[in-house]
Image (tube, rainbow, N blue to C red):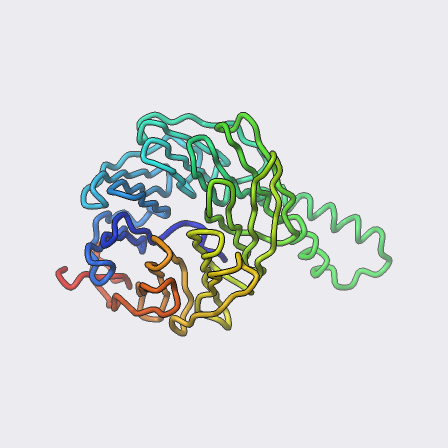
Amino acid sequence: MANIHRRISFARDNVGLVLHSAVWRSVDSGISWSKVLEDERYSALLALPGDFVVAAGEEGRFAISHNAGETWNESRLAVNGDITAIAAPDPSNITVSTTGGQVLVSTDQGTVWTEIPMPCRDFDVDDLESREPGQIWLLQRPREEAVRTAAYYLWLSRQKAAAAKNNEQADWFTARERLLTRSLHYTPDFGRRWIAAEMPACTFDGLRRIGDDEVVALSSGHGCVSARLGDDCITLSHMAAGSGWCCDAIARNSICYAGYSHSAGLFATTHDAGMTWHEVQISDNGVTDVFFKDDLRGWALVGSYGGTMVWGTSNGGLTWSRLTQPRLVQWGGRRFKGLTSPFA
């Protein structure tokens, strides 16, 4: 399963935030951490240049910080389901998506929200990106009940057409997987007009923006695909490099994404927009999120058997060093594995 939500982000050069059971904050580039939001039901995080940070999660939970995560104003948005993703080009233009298939926009730093028209009502939003006010990329997938119904009838038609009834279960899963393809939509005007892309027949899990007119779509089984907007048409170019969980992109020629399964390191392209890739080994465990502040500085969340570690790079991902050492801590009357501050 891909890691859709952003879980690590840096507001300033040395001030970063991590989602891991709670929201944690570091003021020394990830060397030590302290807990700033204790509610473990936050699942999406976004830090903008400067001091503005947004966190959101289950049942409309929404929190804003104006001082890089030091203090927070928490509220609850009246939405259907949980908030799944956040995008914002600046503090005055915030976009969120929900498990109820909604996309809402606020132009006053989260006080008043307006739901925008959706291109596909039968689809949920897995991820979204926004570079300029009103310009939104949506990665959508068909709702599970619609997939099950369509797959069932497709399976029935196959069974009636074939005399043999062997391998029925394989036919069912094949039919279902064919119907799980995501769709990519772009709007330049808060949803009044939508432009769609014909996505490849594979499941895409997350988006990361590159520029005003391009995003990278991540597939857990097929690597990255670049989607570029031009003349009211979205064109795709394949940048596959194996399996991955998460990605980040500073520019078209600087993309980094995390591998899993037999490869627990990072794959990066730095010169040719994804034509060639090189692998950078971080540890023998899976990377769950990666965040780059510029072409040189980046951070990654790495899962381990003892908890979650934060790793950092200062040379564009060529080499990485571990910044935090997890240990078991007491919180809320129970034990959990998480990031800890040496001053806790």
